[in-house]
Amino acid sequence: MDTDTEEKLLAQSLLIASAKHDINAVRNLLKSTSAKVQDAETGYTPLHAAIASCDPKANDRIAGALDKPIEENKVVEIVRILLENGAIWNDLDQNNETPGCIAFRVGLKNVYELIVAAGVRAELLLDKLQGLQATDDDEDDDEDMDEAEDVEGDQTVPASTTVNGDEKTTQKEVDAHSGAPLPTNDDEKFNEPPEDYIDHWDSNNDFLRSSLVFTDTQLLDSSSNAVMMDWETEIMARHATTLIPKSGLRAMNVGHGMGIVDTEIQKHNPAEHHIIEAHPAVIKSMREKGWFDKPGVHIHQGRWQDIVPKLIEQGVVLDAVYYDTFAEDYSALRDFFNEAVIGLMDSKGLFGFYHGLGADRQVCYDVYTKVVELDLMDAGLETEWEEIPVPTIVWEGVRRSYWNVDIYRLPVCKFVG
Image (cartoon, rainbow, N blue to C red; front, side):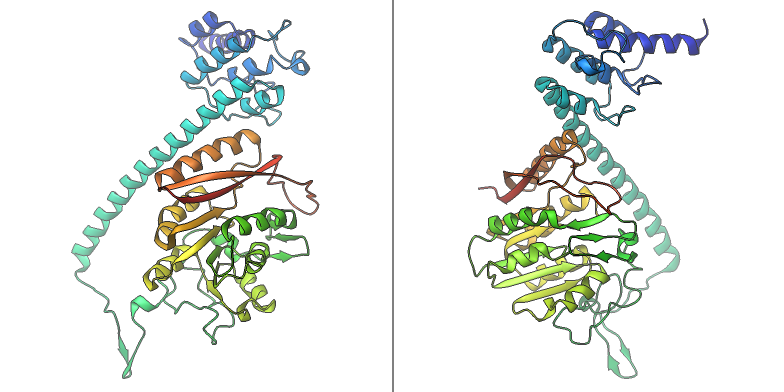
């Protein structure tokens, strides 16, 4: 028997043993084959097979499917063994389901919780490894920079320069990426963003360059991806209420979008209302809708990464901070609450964010709920969750649905202690 044939037979044997919950056979087979193998027809891994065999609807598709009552403790043990041997918690089968999706659908609560826990561990480990890699890359860049400086010599840029007898703006007072003064609603000369101010940004450039489509119910990017939809109104209203329980507070929202949450914030009569928005089309819409003229509203155009340090330097202190950006990944949110929230929020202030992390499927939403809660705790923030039923969503005109869970978890975070 050639090696390829032997490997296929071992893989099939592991899939069948997993489906039958044969603990001894699974242990023995894992000595000679991987827990990551997949069935060519169904896309099942051993994890899928172990769980899907408990689904009566799937019994005609699974070799070794159960024909007797489920003993969930055996399923739990098989799943634990497979995870300990490298099984991947979020592999997809031909039906676009992860093992956790099947466990949730079939109602195997203990199995589902085991997979969620494995997902949390995997995501935290992946983040740690990426952090170590980034550190190594930074060290390499520093070495390259040192070598370049040795060759080029000292070329320090002065804090201010004089041209034709006129002293120019100091480097502290200009945007670090564009070299142009940062426009706000207090700058009457600002009408349109400088043509090149996006060129210097090193992330989410595609989105910031894209055109946007505004309708009464949606805000879409140029690829028909939903930036924001009006079904979120109840959620945004609740965010505003939980973060701003009384009038006269100092609030900030990052990511204006359709203006839903900022409209709700205004209903609570804040003493200060800061809005950070990066997309030129949204800025234009805000100007047309009168946001620049509202009393107490301070609009800051640009990425929060560039604006927040300036606000901290100016001594801005906030009672309520809300974050809801588009085209930024989870690491940006984590950086925000580690840097911006700690630097801007009053000791008794509250922080909230739009929690759509992993909302395309329940198991991912549950995993990222736990991951973000742990990361918030590491940043010195404790979190309370409020659950809100999600209404029926109409996806007409939207490229893909970004929300596929029934409950929205609304976070309210405050400093520990």
